[in-house]
Amino acid sequence: MLAQSIPARDAGDEDIARVHTRAYIELVERETAGLKGPRYLSTGDAVVDATSYRVARRAAGGAIVAVEACVEGKEAVFALVRPPGHHAEPDRGMGFCLFNNVAIAARAYQAAMCHPERSEAKPSAVEGRVLIVDFDYHHGNGTEAVAGNGLSYCSTHAYPAYPGTGTRSYRRGTDVIVNVPVPAEGISTEGFVALWEELLPRVCAAVRPALLVVSAGFDYVAGDGVGDLGVSAEAAVPIAAAIARVAVEHCNGSVAYVLEGGYGIDALTRSIAAIAQVHDAGGATEPAADARAVPRGVWAGMQDSLRIAQGGS
Image (cartoon, rainbow, N blue to C red; front, side, top):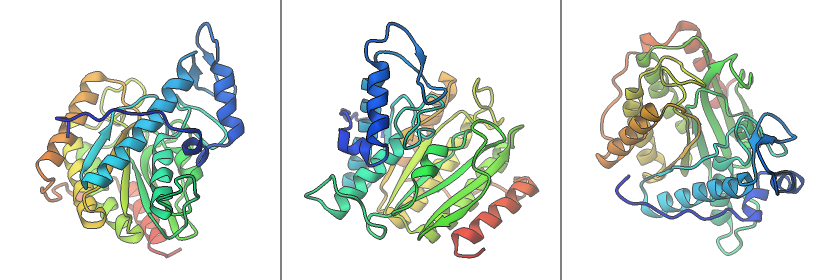
């Protein structure tokens, strides 16, 4: 997975406009043009400078390239991009995020699947079904905002940490939004792994995605300066194995990881290397974490969310 590199490209206007309003795209370009130093974007708490618009377009394009490569190769591909994207809403940048990289890549895939000769076309609700999996410390409010039309979303996140969203799960048409809040004071490594080992296959069984896109944020790792759920960096191994299993079962092995948070370099590099090793080895390990390690309230919330995902109320 890390043995080869794929050059990124800039996301085009039509790529970004499947997720963000034209007015917002123009706002980002206008407010970053010619800046002499950093400032806040007018839509919220995202610091920008003169390079931000160009870099954000390249990050979104890198996510698109990762999706294209993973689908073509039926394998796992990791987009090492910044800035992150999962907080970016259709008309607002916030939380370090300008453009929603995972959503832009998912919509580009859907458009190509629906109309291979017309990549600007809008996806339908039944073709190219995608599940975005988000294990970042923070809730991906921006990704939830754009879910629907064949795009489902599944997240664990600290609550009531920033941005204070992601408290309920629901269906949007035939798509699902599954949110499982975790206490901001933390969770054991085994509990965190067990949560994903239980959650992911059941959400995938409900969604039946053709593609997995992972919002891969590692600020859940103990010691992270922006997050920190107290979870060991070694959790990336069994979580990647769980992702690999469902990718093989539902998506011909296709999964695109896109970097989100994670601000400790050692934990970040160890986690990404561990994910690469799992997929290079075939991801064959079976679930091993004890579900009893999941806090009772979190387990109950997950079960309620799964009932909704499976069509209950």
